[in-house]
Length: 310
Image 1 (tube, rainbow, N blue to C red):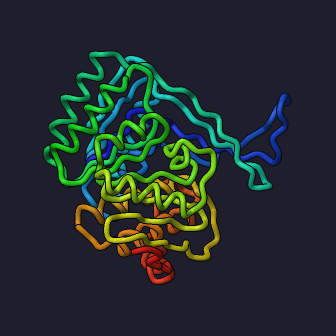
Image 2: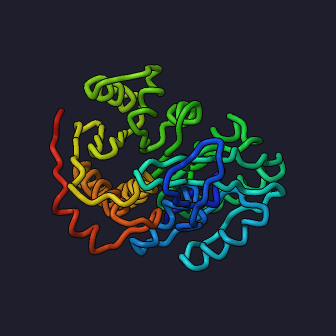
């Protein structure tokens, strides 16, 4: 059993327009509308892999019904806490040129009582889970102590904990030594306190985190693949050459893969290969956080993994 936590989910609307005219009227067409948020997207991909998954977090407002229907359709066990304020809506606007513009709402504010209800629920879920993933942004009302307690509870209750967040929340999570973090290049350079860093500097920093007690650091590099840093070495994997339809949900697909690999105690090179292949399979579809298993199985044979440091 894997449990995913999404503290700040979003209704994702994907819209298309010929060309965005700022300050003018724009006509769009709806491409898709789906219940989303990083942890929810992880749960969707896990269901594609036929894994049983619990999903929890905060959910409220008129859009909540869309999420509930999604969980039912996807066969995701729904343990979300209902809140008074409304879950946010995010808009992804695609132009013919391929340029993408994001309009992201800040999200609701959750009360002390709502936070307490989620923590009580989460303690039960974590103790029954092989792995927990805590993903995405944090709504107003969730303070640092609460987030620390969430990661700490997961660490004490189940075998594998993955955190995929950014900024100050990633710094807090690292202090609690989760089993794996999955920053992209920008997120890890922010964690380093730098504006830019080359691969050698990122590797050195990742090795430092491993020595401090974070067993796995996976750095996603977009179209350039990913690096996995752990105590037995550093591996780099190159993404296969594919026709990319959408990169939305690719990082979450990696987290889904890693949560399975960690729970199955796979070797690092296998963990990296599977995560890159699943991410690439997601990029081959326009549907966010869903993969075609035949694509995934084919791509597994096309991902090149190289050990670059011992």
